[in-house]
Image (cartoon, helix red, strand yellow):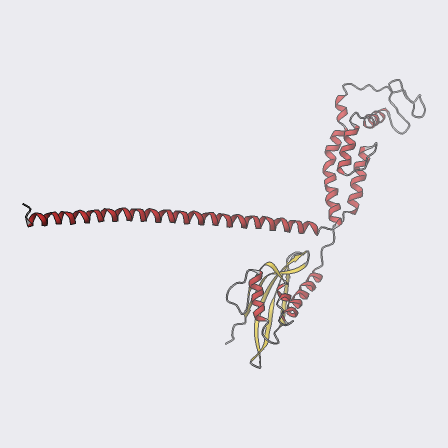
Length: 325
């Protein structure tokens, strides 16, 4: 007979077993959740690594392409005189190899016999040994002339000279000398630009900037003066502007001010060779606001770089003059 105590004990065991089962199920669920979260984090980290690697490769490819583009632009600016000069240098570089090939047949000669007939034959008579000699030179000169003129590998030497850009002919030494002389005579380096001329060019570039700024509501005129890699530290913006879009956006907003212009008060131009310059000084921004004329004195620094298309701005710093006490 089942007593109430037995029923109660059975019920208690059942509840204990149920609690244990729930606890085990919760442990398994937690383990599965933790594993899923770990797999998710690993997948996200892998995706981030792939994205970062792809972005780095893209920057490398862009840098290499930009470097090759600038190299091609630099090559395209070479004058014909510089090209002739480089060609002459390359021809001079080939002379030792050509001379070495010219005298190579002499290595095959084991013995040379010179018979002096004592001037018994007049003109350029042929002696018994087949060596020609004349009144202008002795037998040795005649021997060397014959060896050079009738060398066994004449076609090889002529082909080498032709590929190097020299005129062909029976006299390779004359071809070498005349070829280098004719090219070098035209390979005069262009005279470097005079400092006064460069100063005038930078002054004109500054004036072009002020005129473009004051043109009206078209920011394209002024932004076109900046290099695509330019950085602008602007008067009216707290952050550096480092892309063409950021620079264009800044000037789009600035040129909305009525009667905007910048007036140069002073300028100092420093030249760094023929392709770089720094202009610094003071200017004043002025525009109309609420019917009143507003003026803001500021200081500026422009860094210019010479390109095949003219001077471009690569760095521009502009800031308001500090208040005087």
